[in-house]
Image (cartoon, rainbow, N blue to C red; front, side, top):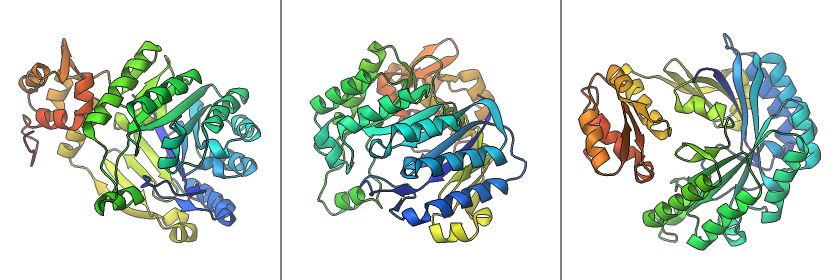
Length: 379
């Protein structure tokens, strides 16, 4: 995978989802225009930026911006950043803030991919997740994207929400497939300590998601999407042929990217940096918004390479791994294969469905055989 990505964070939301740990700002429509101006200023201040093969506008809720302002933002970014012909340009959208007119304006500004945060097609699960849109609004958002001529329409789903049954999840995946998305992401609910869900778990008012339940639901979505003809290209992502997310593949293949906006992260050749999450500080000096940085060691980069590559369904070439990690992983891989976690095809190893559920543990087992690995705990 080659290329360079630009991520743009639009933090504004109409409400706070109780599982969300991203940098978000509830309300504050009065700040929308000023924030977009700051994003353009930060983009203009970038130096030595390669031609970008992907532009991803995420959040938050980018479609919380007015259609005209979102269009101005996209056009402003395109004016100051080098963007390749045919670059993938994605906008995240929440169903309740999507309009056909808004998506037409976005498409005219160059958006060719939209990622719709449906999360569930079960009304009571939507309520439990704190989502404010309806099932009908999610379906209408897909139709609006199609009507706008956007070629790649993705749906995001979350499984394991409070009170969600196996039947709820099965019906939700089936309903999502009825909309005919080009791409689908399905993520297990993750409890982050600082979120309302995390605090509820800490005080005993809510249970952690049950791991057996999550495993069963993952197997359901894997089977349903395989039967529907989608290619499973990353643990949590499926796509029609040729429509995998180019931008996200940059992350999973240790590509380089720059992040703009509050809380955004950047990566260049093993150097990472991230912006402040404080809106006021960012608006005061968007070009000086960096809040921290680190340089990865060779060991860290090699271990991260293995962890990220194991997430991809194409798997890991053991010869490549040996060159990067300085050791032969074949014995460890054979043990994982006997445990039903990996399959081996020549010199390539890939996770099984069971292995996908335990990807972190599989990676630790493989790294435990590496002389570069430090503080690896046996699984």
